[in-house]
Image 1 (cartoon, rainbow, N blue to C red):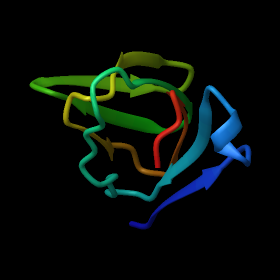
Image 2 (image 1 turned 135 degrees about the vertical axis):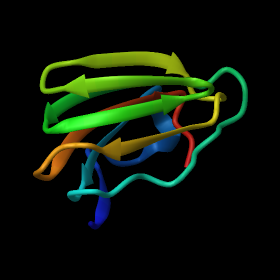
Image 3 (image 1 turned 180 degrees about the vertical axis):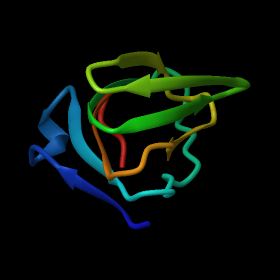
Length: 96
């Protein structure tokens, strides 16, 4: 049920985007996130089934689905499938 993130680039100080690979184990979920205003996030599902909870809305995503949203809304991702879920997350501008 482990969740892991892997930065797909380095030296974010000089970059306009921050790409991250997110792996969510079976029945796992990411922690709650909420960034400052003006930060946007793009999610692309590589493998698995994911429930994206963005503000008051829930989105059921499967392989090849994507979602683009204002990252200042409270959000998290939950694995609803029977195997590990893998997502690409791109945040702009980079925040850590």
